[in-house]
Image (cartoon, rainbow, N blue to C red):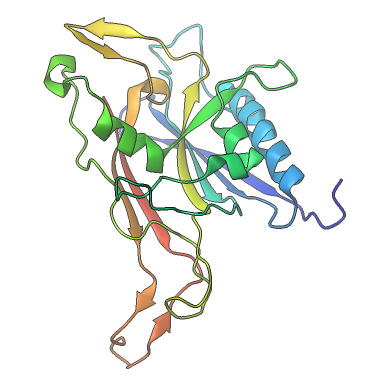
Length: 238
């Protein structure tokens, strides 16, 4: 164990959806903010344990009674991503190579234990990938994303200092679980590479809501109402 590592947390809940028998699985976590190895190991544990936990509520022998439900993973991942401007003038989505924790949680590789596991789609990158896909949405007969890019600030951690006070980073995530071996199928001349979450859910909108009150609120107070920005995502079954 790393001497400076703190305890990670993981909470999970299964919620009844609007349709009979439809569940929504929600998993919330807060990664260790000191240990790189702890975060890397946490990602592997979450992938495996979430898969096992979800299967307790669903019946794989009778999917019509309990169809595969969306699994939403959200929380503070305590990772340090540096956003950079590339030559095209756009912003890169993140620098996942800097963090094993991010690579592990989004990996389609098996976990070291060899046990069944999910992978997770980062809603931030998933939405942008859907917007860049060169297949035709009308050929696939699926809803076009409401956005082709993310809305709002790119970074989520700001501290309580004013604009420009500290180096900001994207450490707050909303992710969707996906099976490790997505199916590929063809519709017309277009190919869907299966980059959608289990049950056929996908991200339609992504927004990062700023936490800086520039001109003051109704009482005249000016500042940040949190050291993190809120992330809001809309998902829909395709």
